[in-house]
Amino acid sequence: MNNKTLNWIPAAFLLMLLPADAGAANFFVRDVEQFEKYIERLAPGDTVFLKSGDEWKDVNLVFEGEGEPERPIVLTARRKGQTVFTGQSRLRILGKHLVVDGLVFRDGSLSGGSVISIGSRRAESAQGCRLTNTVITDYNPPDRKVNYKWVSVYGKRNRVDHCYFKGQDHTGQSVVVWLNGEPNDHRIDHNYFAGRPVLGWNGGETLRVGTSARSMEDSRTVIEDNLFENCDGEVEIISIKSCENIVRRNAFVGSSGTVTLRHGNRNRVEGNWFIGNGKKRTGGVRIIGEDHVVVNNHMEGLLGRGGRSAVSIMNGVPKSPLNGYWPVKGALVAHNTIVDCVSLFDIGFGAGGRGRTISPSGVRIVANLVRAVGDSAVVIRAKGDVTWSWNVWADGSEPIRDGFERRDVAFSKGALFSSPGDFETLAIPTVEHTVTHDINGHIRTTGVVGCDVFSDSPIRSMPPARRTVGPDWME
Image (tube, rainbow, N blue to C red; front, side, top):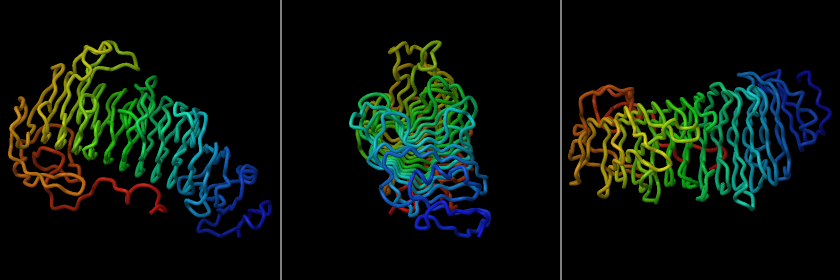
């Protein structure tokens, strides 16, 4: 038994256990009053267990403390998935090395703010904190125009992982990363985002990193290994409004929208799966700004056009304000496989509208493998300075432009996506770029178009699926 005396909580709701960390305590708490009374006593390694049930209604819980990297303070459910917050409940996480694990927020609503906030606008408000194995579902107001976020992430080096977000139908993002002037190095991974219906106006993004006003700041947030299903809120499923972020190894299935590099520069979109499943308005990546890299993505069955094309590169505005359309410069679009999409590339999308008169420049479209449907697969609205080289057009009889070579490439259809059957038909000279691996994690030792190379090595990366994302306690 450690030296903490816990006789201030009734025995029915409090047990002292001797965990592996002998300096830590386990607290079993039945209500907010108990939690708030003793929150200041929490020390590194301690765990707070919240009583099971749905009595946690209209509560404003502030989880505050300072853990250590190897000895975080944990807030969790007595039985994961059985502590349910409803009504106007919300949770704030403030401090260092805090973990929230296994809670459920269901069928509630707010008038503003966030359901869960990791940190606050104060730069040092949250560091090394984690939200994991947690559910927010159908937390919607009666009026869909009411704007609040489901999760707001401030501070530095925080993580949102293995969570389940479903059924959001109101204005506001499911997850937002807020900037504070310094790189925040957050990680958002292995989450399940689903069931977001069309909103009908701005504010229906599923995930946003940054804001227009701070879009020239580096965020360095990594968004990886998440599954997005039927996320139809608006054209921007993921809205990047900052610099030096990575979006990789995510799957977008039947989601009517795109990964939009809306503001900011030097972002990388790599190794993702965009599977349209024949659904209208499904798209890939929309590029705005400077020095973006879009490589190793698999795009299939996308029916979107224009800004919802598989790859859309927009025209820009001269001397654009931060909330405008910065001209595209220096983008690399390489080694993507684009199969059976209505619109493969739309270059100069938006030309002329809202002052967008600056064409893309310094753009390289290299070593992509494409197979189109329809007769307008490549749309050039503004020529600009775009170099097309070593791209392969798989079979068909459609006219092709310079920079493509027609080859007879057979595809085999898998459960989720198609793969080329003969990699010898995809060989090209090695080209200069920054792509060292393929979508499966295999090293690129030879020149091959598309996102996949032949290898006898084990596959290191597969599309996220329901069994690999979301809480570990959900079937």
